[in-house]
Image (tube, rainbow, N blue to C red; front, side, top):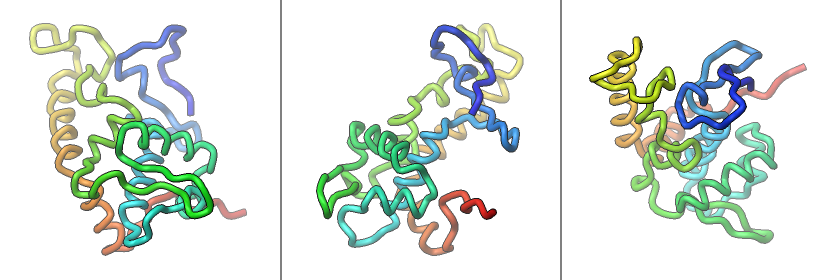
Length: 175
């Protein structure tokens, strides 16, 4: 991943968090860590009556680096979304019922809430009084995204994953 807006100091603005994947030139608003966190949380929610799901299993099923996934899952554990357990029967489990964990909760735990509140162009003070060129469109989109993420639960997503047998991960590369 390459940051589009290279800056020496860390900025709190959303434009500084937009990433571009150099392989396919797709612009992403959520970080790769957040996308992996969402995928892993859906996977854990979709596995019924297992208790703790091993991180190795999640890593293999979702085609995510084990070490990177471990760091992402630590963030979800610290936010109270997952519980973790060490040992041979260890792994991660949802800290509460899947219908009580929204997509917003997962995004906020990993990427924060700037995507739901900040200017798309990263301009401080952007608002109705002093809008940026993208303000009207982004404010409407941001509001819809906020609503969708609050209303969509891990249970909803896990049920769709199980019912429609949709994939949660990139397909493995074949050589």
